[in-house]
Image (cartoon, rainbow, N blue to C red; front, side):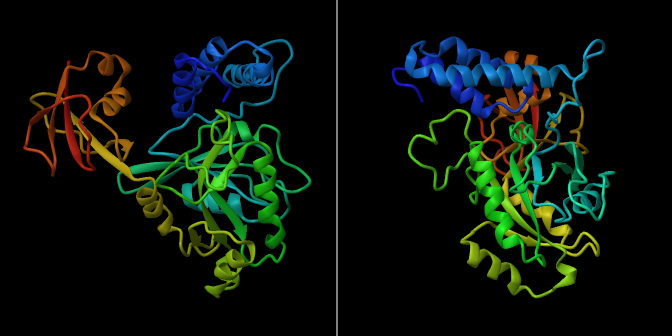
Length: 340
């Protein structure tokens, strides 16, 4: 962070870290550029902000309708309870796994670099959905230049490897190195989304460094069911990611992912109702642990959040219909009635 920054800049930086929607991130970038101190020591950061504004503006604009056309957009709008991106080396079975988990139509082939563009799909778990985005593979020879942009809205990463491929001993460190060169750091702590493990002094203050909680997916377990293979791999590489063992071919282990994500991301489901009517129990709004009534109101509509006066709530930790304020912490399964 530049020295002698204003409170406005600090506020914009924090807002940028929290923003998930592309439009919100673009507004925050413009505010960062407006409030950053203008002197020689911040010239590099100013240039970085301007570049990101240009890239995000182009991504949001999509392909042009006339004249010179650009390629397809690489920004996947977050949907569901959380967005998770699949990253891995070539031929790790990412796309096959994505197709089995979400029912998507990812391009699948027995050759590397089958995936060329971000492919979103929804993983159902109970009454919520997680958005899984299949990304092109990463290797020492090539990484799509836009891949980091696609990761900006992610809540976490599924790091997929072929547990039977001896080359994974070299592939995983290469992926971590390529990402770190772009200020993307895969972390082990899912309870703290922006935890910066093993980050050098100064990186944690970089508004553009990205710290993503990661689970290691050991794919193709049907080819070698030895449970000790994963532990051996992690020990050799010094990794401590939580690990799930799966097989895209047989379906073994696929059911574990939804419950893992629900627990690890500390998802809180909140159901809404209008006065005099029953609650809508079919489609909950979701926040993370520590979310408030105001956070739920923002998900319903920004105007409701702006005009919210109080709420009535039904749940395990309150009296039925108890009146609460906007800052009241919600719990999983709460029913909330918003009053303007």
